[in-house]
Image 1 (cartoon, helix red, strand yellow):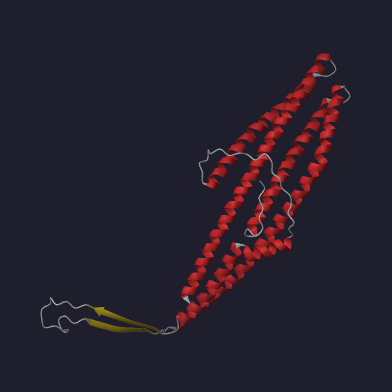
Image 2 (cartoon, rainbow, N blue to C red):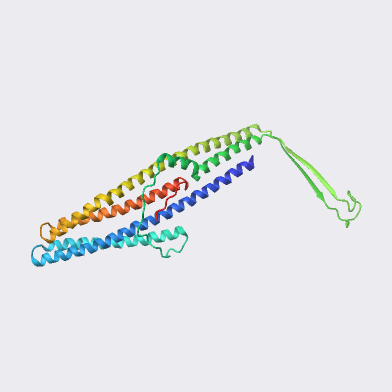
Amino acid sequence: AQAQQACFEATSLWQVYVSRQLKITADLRASWYQLYQISKELETNRSNQELLESLLEVANAQVATGTAGQGDVLAGTLEYSKLEARAITLKRHLATTKSQLNRLIGRDIGTPIEVPSELPVRLPDWDLELLRSLAWEHQPDIEAARLRRQASRWGVEVAKLKRRPDVTVNASWFSIEDNRPTPNLVDVGQDAWAIGAVVTLPIREQKYDAMEQEAIRRHSATAASVEDVRQQYDALLVELWEQACAADETTRLYRDTIIPEAQRTLEADQAAYANGRVEFDRVVRDFRDVITLELGYHRAVSQLATSLARISQATGGAVEFEAR
């Protein structure tokens, strides 16, 4: 019984090790997807700086001809300064994320990492019930809880066996040499055997009652722990699946509708400003909207990929996903 208990405990530790591997893999993927997000924010920032430079050229030309005031140039310069400050923050964040990724891999933090330029990702054909059933079957944390329950059940058996008499029999053999003086109990040159027995009798019933009751309490606690772990992963999968669905819907909405409309509005107002039909403030407002929407799109893509990677971790790797 003790051997069975030890076997289940050792196997549960292996499941804990597997769970740690899954977490590290998911952390690596999340850091990789974050690199994509930061790089896209930097790319968006640079393209918007170029766009703002062209707007400033138009504003300066309008000021030179007297059709616009100096305030337009000042407003555009302020926006450009904000973009430069944002670029500094993003570069620092990019360097920090790279060092974190290297640390997770076990490499020197200064090792160069190629930043992903694209992150093709879509919502897989999963559903919540499928993910929950796969997690119950494959998640190592749930399996470790089950194994601990099995070990505690054998612990109850061990506690019950403590009540039984313990009989120990031993036998020893001794080689007798010829180089001893006489007389001796054993003849010179004749080998000897020694046989013994030890019997342990349990006589303190209260002690063994307490041991058995403690083992039963531990078994009850581990049985409840299995259900607790399952409920935790059920709740986690609900949250992650909702995040993934929301990110997928947001991504498609940004890509197919909102961003194209915002870009068309900005282009129309740029042309109107060049002809003196709209104010510069309106163009700046359009410009800010485009930046915000583009950043929101890339963040949604990163969030979708990260949520799917965490779902893969939660199911114990039963469903695989990796955006490259």
